[in-house]
Length: 141
Image (cartoon, rainbow, N blue to C red; front, side, top):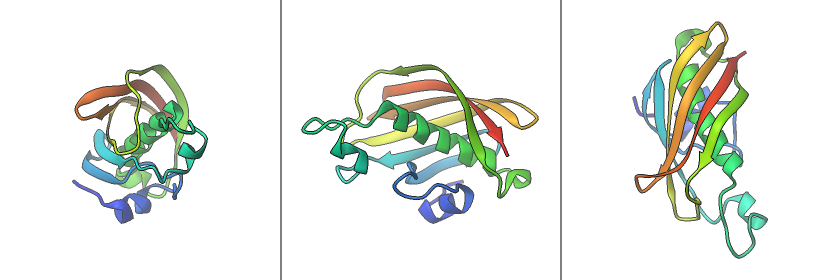
């Protein structure tokens, strides 16, 4: 299923400027989600990161990936209205900078869940090239 920004905001509690997913291009509830973030020079973090050489902070790329995974986790009927809280990040690697004008392609597969604790594998790409990857831990509350 595909979700627009209004539908994403019905699932996630995040709001601009901290909502970092513009569109979900595919979602299999409880399994995986893919989405996009259109990175523009209007992002507030570019004011200080870095003046004259804007690069999207890696931690915000990880947050965008987590929000994408949260859409998959919270799209399951029994999780409606709940929160997906960051529990941890492992093996994060950043392969190339993300700059204004880039379309960040986000994907997160939920690989395991034990009660409220789950694990996902996530990747962010620009023009099909890997920009970042990581393993995420989340808790559903």
